[in-house]
Amino acid sequence: MESQFHPTMENSEPASSIAAATLQKVLNNLAFRSKWSEVNGAMGDLGTYIPIVLALTLAKDLNLGTTLIFTAVYNILTGALYGVPMPVQPMKSIAAVAITSGSSFGIPEIMAAGICTSGVLFLLGVTGLMEMVYRLIPLPVVRGVQLSQGLSFAMTAVRYIKKEQNFSKGKSSGERHWVGLDGLLLALVCAGFIVVVNGAGEENRGGSGDDDDDDDDDDGDNGGGGRRGRLRRLRRIITSLPSAFIVFLLGVVLAILRRPNVVKEMKVGPSTIQIVKISKHAWKEGFINGAIPQLPLSVLNSVIAVCKLSSDLFPAKNCSVTSVSVTVGLMNLVGCWFGAMPCCHGAGGLAGQYKFGGRSGGSVAILGAAKLVLGLVVGSSLAKLLNQFPVGVLGVLLLFAGLELAMACRDMASKEESFVMLLCAAVSLGSSAAIGFVCGIVVYLLLRLRSKDHSCSAV
Image (tube, rainbow, N blue to C red):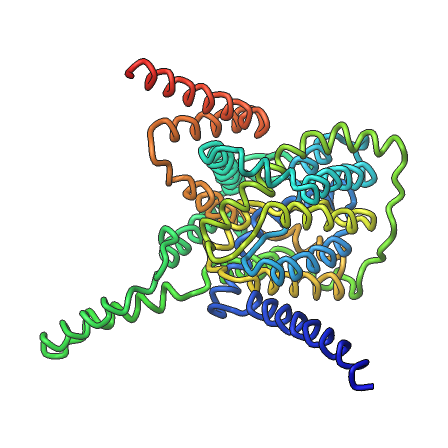
């Protein structure tokens, strides 16, 4: 009898140890490095998320409550899985097509486009083809895609700050007034505040321990005057402030002040979740007009660029292109059937959350928990409050996210690499990421061929 049960006990021990190891990894991935920094980092992606979600809600009657709940789950799961502030962003090309196409591209077409795009990404991930693509693409081309996306974010942010926005039509509607609850002066003050607190995004913003010791020594030598010490302490206090969180809270307060009755107009309770019915025509329109333009952007920015940026910022973490491609696929293969906005990861969101202090999966898990509460408590009626949120403040958050992403491209080691990166970025900004990518690859190969010819002729 003893020998019969012995194998079972041996098999149960590895299973329990694997479960314990998995649980410990999840807890480590969600552990805060610094409480306020992680909370602050959670705000870094809202400059992209809120405008697109609000535009689709107003223009296409997107179920905001369902989107909040599903993206909340995505945030929490990706934070637990990767241990880095991996963002959950709207699929921007699909959103742009939906906003500008009128009634011919509605919710069924949006969801069909998201499912088709994600199906391709899922297949590329599980077959290992995405890993092969990642290894073959030269670094200057990846940097060019990142640079173009960062500059695109920054340019969009400047437009949000300078001009009034009509998100339901995806257009600017005139110059923004200097003074007001959504005035240009407010945006400039918020931008200046973030610069003072965060600087250029350098690590150890509060100063090093050595500097503090030196200051203390100097103060002692000067008879304990303490002026430099007080200035140092004041600087530490200022640079430890959660700047993005404070700016976002200011935006919420101003949104309520702009329309005090908006809180009373919001309904308590989650939105009804329903399965979206997708016709053959919607599948066709979604694939041709939505998925095909979105696929190059998703492959390049949502998988390849975000994995490269993650390895740069968090070298100890393993965010493989295979797993990222699969998670993007699974998110939308489930959520889009219920009307949740098509989502992906994105290098811009990761850069924004890192810029404001996000250093672990706990940062996006906080954001996910907040979305989940809002989705269950107020649902789609949250759009009434978001519609009053100062757009200039969102532009400020988006501006710094774009700059942080663009600054990741400063590691080019030669003039040739910089040339390829800048050409790829310029073409991407002027046309599309897909065309910029192709041009970058072609120019990179031509330069490699030219250098080989020169070396052969020299011999």
